[in-house]
Image (cartoon, rainbow, N blue to C red; front, side, top):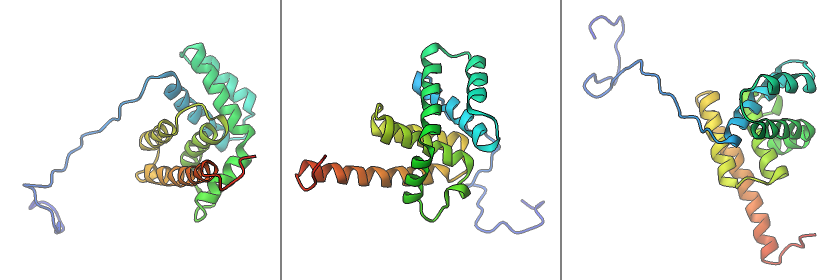
Length: 176
């Protein structure tokens, strides 16, 4: 401690340990989880380049060692997000109004796009699974607080969706 050229306030070497340990999160190996990670990589490329969708998708699909079911899920997710991107971005913007969609980090934006596509449009996976997977992607690939941002946006969407469903169930809103 005497070697430091500055005073370390509130640092107690008996309690506070500084390490260079790298903490690696375990990656889920289910087909859908693998497909979400691959889809995030593809959507990131599409969002940061002017490469055509078909070419990017074909290149990634043919280079992937995963099974045919995983490749089908990747194709569905990527094409679905791209097809509905404008509507998805509007919804994200609605629930994160302080962050213009083009100013949201590319990784964050695409994690949210995948989750919103699966939740609102595709509606195949359970909502808690979609949110947990999105938060996990954010922890693995995003910045320090990305997971909180992703969780907050998806939580707000879920709260509103649940409130809408409750109104329908209570007969307050005509579901048609």
